[in-house]
Length: 72
Image 1 (tube, rainbow, N blue to C red):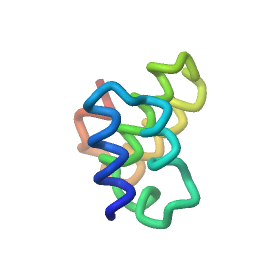
Image 2: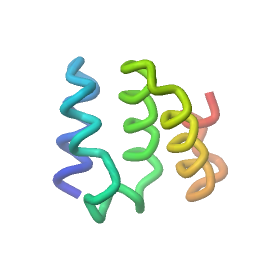
Image 3: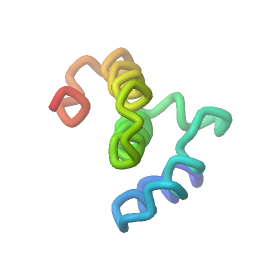
Image 4: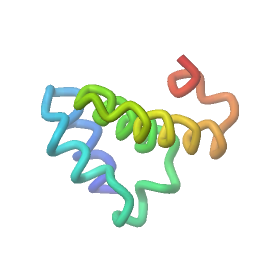
C-alpha cells in the first residue's frame, strides 16, 4: 500500500507524472483499491490521457460500485 499512498500524496500535491508512475499497474496494491485507481484516473486526466483515465475510473467502480468519487 506504500506505493498507493505515495501516489495519492503526489497527485494531491500537483505531481501528476510521478503519481502516474506510482499508481500504474505493476504495483500489486494498485489494482486492489478503488481509491488508487481513481487517483490514477485523475492523474491521467490531468495529463490529457482521457481514455486511460476513464478505464481506471471504470475499474474503480467495478471494485466498488458505490465509490462516488469515481462516478463523478
